[in-house]
Length: 281
Image: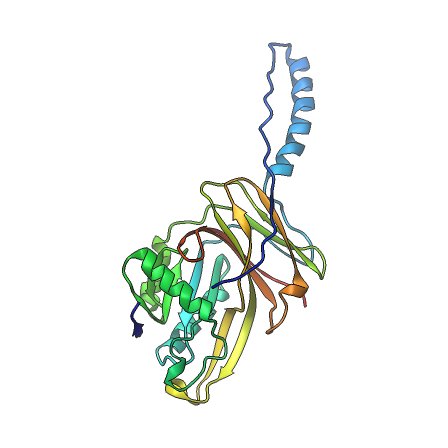
């Protein structure tokens, strides 16, 4: 484990829709008339309910189930302790129900090898988590679960224990690729408020490391985050967002992750909802 003492940009465009629950009364009537009236009343109500529920996505790429956990792995190609953690994250990436993300950091670049996948914003995000938790712990490999719990990324028993204790995600998030040019993102109703972030992701990257502690090692990385785009704010009601895929593609991007997270980019709080979906190129 490598210790260190303790911006994610993006244009925004967002629209939120709110609906008021219709009120209706049933007078005391005969059974047959009551059943008939009940059916006629429930039909439009069912259609209304469908329109306000989180969308069931269809199309070439779609996802809507609430995952168990978002697992952020802070890793570095210059850290000799990290390859086992990268392998563990790969196993999670093959397990349904998780959103495992590789966030490569750049603060070990001075050791002789510049990490080819690192983003400085990931180092900033990791430091912000340490500040918000109040423990000041910032190291590689480090895992942060649902924006709250942290543990050592290459320790499988510790990771399993942390996942078992992780507070659940509660906000439904659906993502649909309507065609080759656009994504439709729907955030369902829930408690709390936060920011909505869209991350282009490369599901698989293989890197041969030429210098530093891992010199000569070839490492497979999974769900590598390649950028951050803020779609807007979520305030507890249903919200819809769109994004152009041609603005996200590049650097082998073949998936997207959506995070609904309380707090702000500089003071991140618990993650409330998330989705991870492959996209067609």
